[in-house]
Length: 176
Image (cartoon, rainbow, N blue to C red; front, side, top):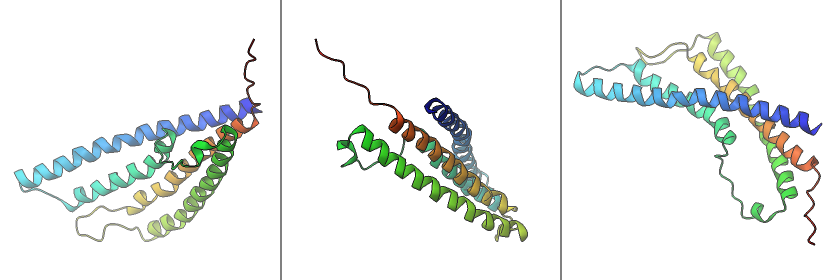
C-alpha cells in the first residue's frame, strides 16, 4: 500500500515537474518578446498592440503553471514559527490537512474556470483593442488546466504526507 502511494505520488510530481520545466520556457520567450518590442519601438518606430498583448499572455501562462512548479520544487513560503517545533509526525499531519485543503481549493477554482472559458468561447472573445490578439478563450483555457495541475501537485504532496504518517517510526539504535 505504501509503495503504491509513493509510486503514484512520485509519478504525479514527475508529471508536474515536466510541465513546469516546459512552461518555464515562457520566461525566455517573454524576455525576448519584451526586448524585441522595446528595441523595435525605439530603433525603428515599430510596435503592435498584438505583440504587447502577447507579453501579458506569456506572463499569465508562466505564472499559472509556475504555481504548481514552485510547490514541486519546494519554493513555497512557509511561516514555520510553530511548525519547526512540531514532531515529524505532527508536521506530516499538518501537511496532510493543508494539502487536502489546497487540493480542494484548486479543484474548485478549476471547475469554476470552465464556465468562464465556455462563455469566452461562445462569444469568440478577442481583444477589445484594435489590432489586438483574438481567441482570448485559448488563454483563458489555461486557467482550469493550470489549477488541475496544481491539484495534481497537491495530491502528490498529500500522498507523501500519508506515507509519512503510515510508515512506522524508526527506532533509535540501542547504545551498547
